[in-house]
Amino acid sequence: MIDLSFKYRDAISYLKKEAPFTPDAAIVLGSGLGNFADHTKKIKSISTLEIPAYPSASVEGHKGLIHFATVQDKKIIIFQGRIHFYEGYNLSDCVLPVLLAKKIGCDKIIFTNAAGGVNKKFLPGDLMLVESFNSINIKKELTELIGISSLEVKNNFLNCPSSRMNKIFKETADEIGIILHSGSYWYTKGPSYETPAEIQMIKKFEGDAVGMSTVHEAVFASSLSMEIAIVSCITNMASGISEQRLSHAEVTETANTSSEKFALLLKTAISRL
Ligand code: HPA
Image (spheres, rainbow, N blue to C red):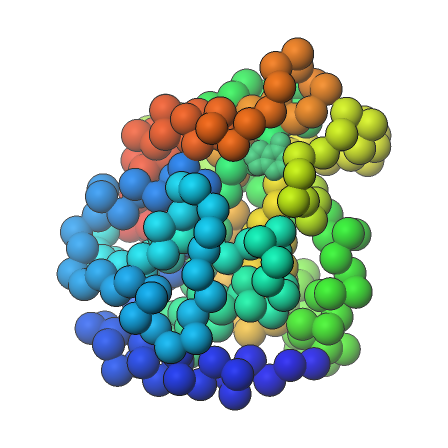
């Protein structure tokens, strides 16, 4: 098990020094969903390049910015730019935003991501609240990340994602008239999109959406006793579910198209956290 607090001690002390406040919640933005930050009142923005030893995101649509911002009376920290396993990083590097949020005193975190729709009821542009996720592809890596869990940590996983936060998301979506599906997110390592045969397997095991992020971040956050919620933007139908060929451009374009409703849902839910 790697001591991340030691490995990233300079990044932690840098952010502690720069943070203008203790955030009520952290938000991690997924591919193409980065412009959520423009819907908030930004107080201070930091380039991740300024943070000692911060891994650089190489994926189009991930900017490498950390914003301290407000949404109504809530103070938030926004990570615009994710670190992905498929870029060649260790899972332990990918969870750095979670570690930093925790170290500056934040105990709630909302993950967002772009995902492929496996459930045929979904359409590109739809939003899905993650009720559960499948981490079968990274069980070994997760154990290396969090170690053999204590009873207390195991109990945290019983409420991951948080039923309280999910209730807020569902009620908010109903009230503001946004369709928010519920479902299970299946993690794949990438780097390439899945094959149609892989998607058929995921479908058989009742995965509703598939993506290459979030699960390790959520498990790590939960192991640190943070309350978590996950919202996926279905940017495309998964491989073989529709005729269309998958591309990263399609993913970011669809995410951009959904960005208004996504921002409205997120902002309203955050104000109620
Ligand atoms: N598969 C994996 N990751 C994704 C997809 C997909 O279809 N769409 C967006 N991220």
